[in-house]
Structures are given as structure tokens and as C-alpha cells.
Image 1 (cartoon, rainbow, N blue to C red):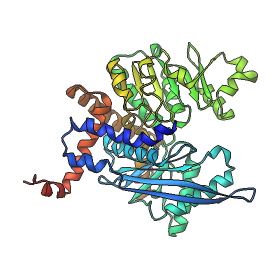
Image 2 (image 1 turned 120 degrees about the vertical axis):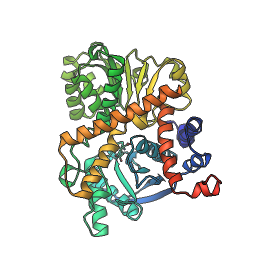
Image 3 (image 1 turned 90 degrees about the horizontal axis):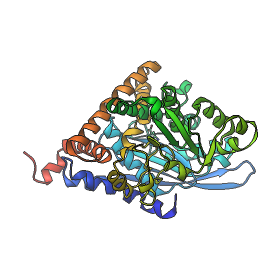
Image 4 (image 1 turned 90 degrees about the vertical axis):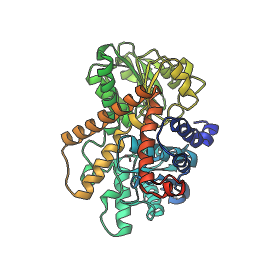
Length: 434
Ligand code: GLU
């Protein structure tokens, strides 16, 4: 992400509120409140490295709004993390939880680090050090973290363990996305991809798609990107392009996705594998850049990597009629109207990638009740929520004649507004009390 984008990303995110406000049934004061994150914590984390030296890392945790419940949202480990980025991500979590009707507000955390450069023990010391700093900020009733970019179940397990040690009680509900033996939920691992898949299945139904005629490109082949590619491929969709941070590959007839996943997870890199050694000879694929992948002539484009990928600069060159935002914030607010003008349908991040936090909610419920669900129950409940809320947003889009992102913000804003006005105070002071 370019430095100038990082400075503006939170402002860009909250800018969308003004547009949604025009179509929502809430007071201006609600919008004003939501433009300011409730709390932001910056911490320094000293870590003893394996060679004996000391490195001090910077981390953040932001709680954006907790009117509808404890704040909820992941923690990312990435060298480009900034405070405005974490604020934007926390803001999106508030709206994401509201759009799928979860009893949560939004939060997010981040540590400025390239975790791939750390040994496993350094990573564990960093993780435990971060939780030590956050121990009074997070909690099952206040703020509940989860995985995000470059964090995973093992890291969530360390975090839960450290928090439990500090508070001297086993507290699985403080964090979600944990390993199954430590209180994780079945179905959490592929939940983000699965939620987006259920959205696409609704679209398939509405548009009478024949899966084998639908060409899909997936940018980002991490947890979410891999799972949605796998599910679509299993249904007969043609996944013709995938990429990761190293670059991408394209194949006109489509890839055998399970073997791509196998290769990626063996080598940690797509392009390198395809350009060297035996796999390169075995699989016939063309190398493309991440930028080229976005502009391919496909039917469905799935940005599943980082924010700010489709901007005013490349929006006009995007050819896919349907874009499903599996990443958070891949399309900037300047790009939105350009895509809309060209008739592109954007299934927005706060809906399309809400499957992850929905199954996190299921995990939190299971931890607090101590009664665990089967994978079938998790899938069925996730499907019910995603399909219902997809249709609420889709119908709002059609009824109001607005784009799907604005419709998602309208639905969420109305729900958050209802919670704020149920507190009664605002109506009293704005003279709207009956
Ligand atoms: N990091 C994921 C997201 O952006 C999941 C958050 C959660 O499970 O709380 O939605």
C-alpha cells in the first residue's frame, strides 16, 4: 500500500457514511458519532530475538463502536500496518457485524511486523508480549480479537493462553479462531471463504448462471482466497487466475484448484513454483502480475488480498461485471462510482466477507455455553444468515436504486441507529422525544 493511501484510508472509509446517510433512517448525530473511533491503544512490544538482540515492535488495538455489543475484529501482522488502517478496519467491523445482525460492535488490531522473517519462538514471544499490553483492553464482554492477515489459529491459541495466565482463569471466549482442541469452532477455518461462496450462490440463483460458463479470477491466495476458489471449483466454476503477494498465474481453461492449494501450501509461493522445476513443466500456466489479474476479462473478480487494489487509476479498466470483495477495503471510494457507471456489481466487503466473523460469533457462543456444535450445524447456521442478509441488502439496493455497497451501509446504519436511539438520550437532547 502506498504511503499516501495509508494516511487517507480511515477518512476514505468514513466518507461512505455521508452517502449512506442520504438513504438511511437515522439522525445526523448517529453518523457523527460513528466517524470517531471510541478508543485506540498504541503499544510498544519489546521482544528478545533468537540471536540475543532486542527489537521493539509497535502494535495497535482500536475499538470503533460498542453500542450493539462487545467490539469484535481480527489482529493483523503486516509490515505496512498503520493506525489509520487499523481504525478503518475497526470501522468496517462495526458495519460488518451490523449487516449480518451479530450482537457486536467493531474492533481491530495490528502489529507492524513481517512475521515471515521471525522464527516461531520469536513470533510466540511477540504475540504474548502484545497480549500482555492488551490484557486490560480486551475481554469476552469488551473486545474479542480474531485472526486477520498473516495471523492464524496457532497465534490465537497463544493469545488465549497468555490472557488466561494473566487473569488466572481459562478464558476461551476472549478470542476466536482458536485451534479446535483449545475451544475453536468447527467450520471457522473456511468461514470467510464460505460466507462469500454463499453470497455468490445467491447471485447464481438470481442470474441463472451455469457454473461451467463462469470464469473467475481470485487475487490473494491466503485463507479466504483458497477456500472460495476451492468451493467454486467444486461446483464447476472455472477458476482461470489466482495470485499471491509474489505474482499470479493464468490458465484459459481454468485450474485444478485442489492441486494449486497443495502446491501453494508446500512452497508458500505460487509463481516461484510455476516457473521452476518439475511443476512448471507439469502445469501449463502463464505468469501475470497482480495488476493484470484485476483487469482480466472474467465474469467474477474476487479481490481477496489487501485494501486499495481497485482505485480511480484502474477502475475503468476492470472488465468483470461482478466483483466480490473478500478482502477488506479492496475498492476505494473514488473507484466505486466509476465501477457503477460501467455497470459493475460490487458485492461489498462488509457483507461478502462477513462469514468469518459470523462463525467467530458461533465460537464465542459455544465457549460461553460450553456446548459445541457439529460442522453441519455451523454450515447450516452460516448459510441461513448469509443468504438472509444478502437478500436484505440486495432488496434494499433495488428498492432504493442505489449500489450494493451503499445498500449494505444503509442496512447497517439503520440497525446501529436503532441501538443508539434505544438508549433514549439522543432523542431527549435533540427534542425528538415523544
Ligand atoms: N478478520 C476477519 C474480518 O476482517 C474476522 C474477524 C473476526 O472473526 O472477528 O472479518
